[in-house]
Length: 499
Length: 115
Image (cartoon, rainbow over all chains, first blue to last red; front, side, top):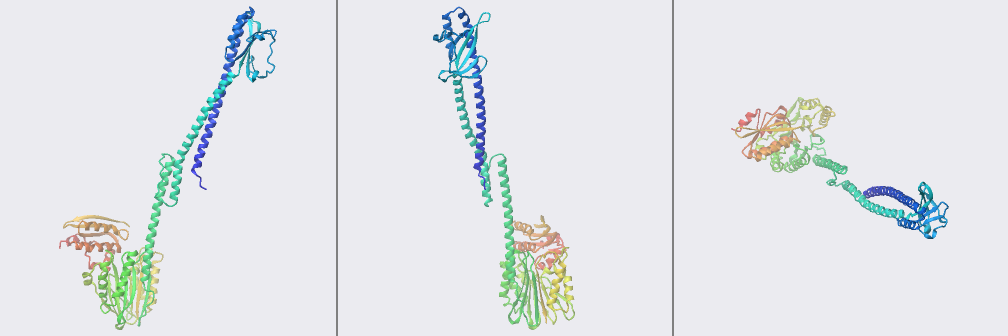
């Protein structure tokens, strides 16, 4: 599936080599052809001029039958390169003069084996001579003064003159071409490698990044499109890494909130508590993100019960841990201080917690000790909101909030000095409402709060109803008010009804 | 939801922090860093001007409570001034007024350090 970069290199090399061979081949062909043509022309022209020279010089000597001069001329002519024979044939076809004395007087015949290969210009014939040698035969008329034809010069020059030079040219061109091609192959290879190496680096880098190593930087130094591509790649990888880090971070936060939520839920009592002469109804609904509310009912000595409702500042695991601490301490200490006012329990709680709690964190707590025997509940509030009581005898609603600031804010003396407690009598039909501000501060989409008034109104309307019915009515009322707005805080509500 | 801090100095070496915006979970650290800086520089007499603060969450209160003791131990204090209605309501509801001093005007808060 993956195309290897070496094949691109081979492609480039191959293409460049083919191109070079074609170009060199064409060049060589044309050079050699041109050379051959000009060479042939030159030899032909030279041949013609030698023949014509001979013809004009020999005319007088033939008239005067000057054999000596004729022989000398012949000798001169023969000394030209490549000349194989020189003859003068008279008008009767007899050889009048020749380089070979033995031919004198004989009739001129072209060698029987002569084969006409090509007719060049009028006066040149090329034929196969003895020994297979190609001979160019030049003719020139011998004219005496006044244009009287005495005969014809026939001059034979070997084609090998041309052939030799051409062969040499072929060899030279061949060597140069070969050298050029070899250099070309090397050059093409180097060029191909140089071009494709960055591609290889890029491909390898992409692969490394693809395996998940987002810290890897592709290093391509070329100042061309490949360098650009590498830079873009690196940028993309960085962005990817940032996005990934953000996702991981987000997941970690969500996980922590999940853990906190689980811890918190594990602390809330699941079972309904049964107290003789009383009904206890509870409702708890955590908000999506906030992790703060907590409530509990603790059995105490002498048939008493401790009612706790708290709200930890902050959210997440730290808040959940604080809540766990509060619960543990209360579970162990509440029994010790159950014979004392509720505020004493909170003083103990505060002194233990303030030492360990993280700076700045605090817990608002309501603590009430119910004494069924005496039909009263002794309540204390450490920064908690109002507690409402419905009095059955007149349908009125009372509000209680003894002094006290949150647990954890101050380790000792000042907390102990300020915190108060109060006895609340519970008569038949009376209902006590213990809740956190998640109810009164529940908001609708117009950012309005549910508020104390609506709560009081709802309680009033449920005058004769049971604790459970009243609780349901409150929850329904809040839900109806909030409608589709998202729940911003935990909602906790405990109703104690004296029967 | 943003928060800005403007630090001023008044006579008697009292430092005023003008907070403008919302002090909630995401911005509480701004206040916290400011208090930390002052504490490390031994500037322990602090008035937090909340006139421009519309909302303080438990994280915000936590920041103040967290440094209250430290400043007090360093011969100083953190006092609040000019809280707006809603903020003051929560302040009183949680009875922070039992152990944190607050005043209607910044001047009063500054003056109180002289006492």
